[in-house]
Length: 114
Length: 116
Image 1: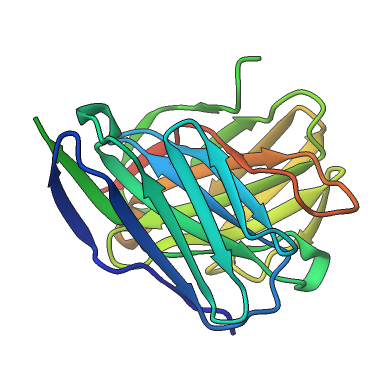
Image 2: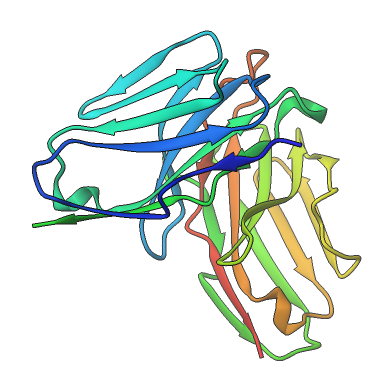
């Protein structure tokens, strides 16, 4: 059974700093890994999707990497801003029944201090 | 595109009452998912549909829960009878199922259910 872990559960950093969020998974046979952002009282917003054949994906100040063999992914946020404060979740898609299931981590709550 | 639309945003009901949550997926998406989020258990997949057909309902906690998708633009999740432990935020999400399985998932804003 796939298990996804995100450590730490919460992180506070001063505005302007670069930061890295971590995600690890136990079963490396994945189709892809997705990073989401969740604001309070809102649903999840997809940030980046990395296919199993890719090593990284970039979108603006965000860069996600994937090391499938070691079961790890990182989300790098450059030049952090207060608007980046949110909970960040990673999720992996396995070749499971129907190939549609995502297994989510419990998230890292990020606070950017102005 | 209006995104995934869920209603109601908040629902407060008494134990034993029937609760119906509604979802309109993004137009053109052919996969629809119902998730439940709690502090203790995080995000749990309850059921998902592909082309309006339920594919996997192994996450549905009990027979009190049922879900339907009568057409491509509408789905319901029903709890009957509701219990306090059903209190959670229920999310609907949709995606375009492709052969590569690399389509991102789009979430609605959720329904916060409180059962007293």
